[in-house]
Every structure is written in C-alpha cells, then in structure tokens.
Length: 230
Image 1: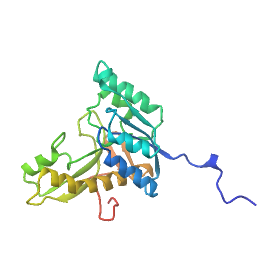
Image 2: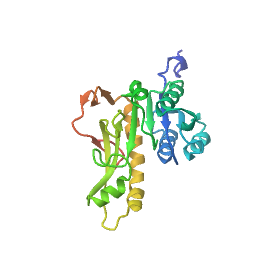
Image 3: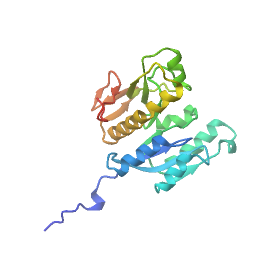
Image 4: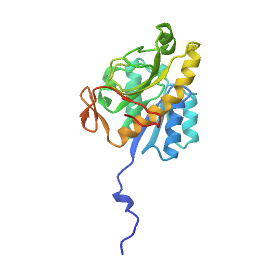
C-alpha cells in the first residue's frame, strides 16, 4: 500500500527569497511572521545588509536565517560593492530578491542579471515621489491619498513597473511621522501579498510589462481590506 506521505525528493523546491535591508527590518519581520503563520509560500534563505549592525540582521539571526553584511567602504567603487554583494547573494540561489528598506542606489550593470527577479517596496504612490522624504512631500503637495508601492527594480530609481499599491487617506492633522506610522502596517501587508503572489506564479515581469495570471496588468493591483490584491 503506498504511503500517504509524498516522497521528499519529489516535492517541488520551496520558492527562495533573499532580503536586502539597511535598517530596522520591519518589512522583513512581516515576511518572517507571514512565513511562520503559513501565509507566505516561500523560504527566506538570506538577509543581507550594507550595515553590519542593522537591526534587520538581528531579526534574521533570531529567526535562524543566514545573514551577510558587507561594508561599502571596503570597496573602491559603488559598482565594485554591488558586484560583490550580488555575487554573494547568488550563492544562495534566490528566486526573488526583495529590497526592504535597502538604502542604496544600485549599479546598473550589477543589477541587470536580476531584473525581473527583484522587487522593492517604496513609501509613495508611484510614480509620485521617487526617492526620499515621501511623506513630507505628499503633505506639502496637499494630497488626499498617500500610500506605498511594490515595483520591479530597474536601473531607474523607483521607476520600475509597479505591481501593486496600498492607499491610506491623508488626515488634516497629519505630520510626516503620523503619516508614516499609519502607512507602515499597510506596507507590511502589501509586501507579503505581493511576494506571495509572485511565489505562487501569479505575477511575473515580461520585458517591461507586469503580467498577472499571464495577462498584462493595465494598472497596479490594489491591496484590499482582507489583505488580498485585486
């Protein structure tokens, strides 16, 4: 009588994630928590940073995830650092690299082999407010809505094709700090939802077009109240 358990050697290998972070790693923690809860069909195989004492690395170590820290000062150029970093990342064979608060502009040549296999989460409703200080800029512009975007990474800063976005209303008494604080939880849910969809094969990049279930995505998906994308 055949066993009810599948042969381990015949199982589909788990989708592999590498996460790059420069700071506290709250988005990384959201991925770790979702993986533990069974809501993320992927294994985080590496967390890498350009900061040796980044709290994100401690979060990874506490979760039993391999870590890597490289110091940009040890390399003659930005390109040399990026080349070394991605060579080390490649050793872990990730299916997807997630930039989760990785505060560096990547060299185009080092990035090129990873286009279509790397996403970033950015705290604005792209194409608005690429770069830094997004919450302050949204308030200064008088925006009624603010949000976060997950996009594929290209050589253009925060300019790659957008996968999905989460929106929140801007309140009259908001400050950059209160706006950032209210958005953070939505960022976490958005990133988890996007990574899950990519890991399940529902989302992919074909040249410069995001495909959703094989069809070109005309507009970014939106995070719904139940945490799903639609």
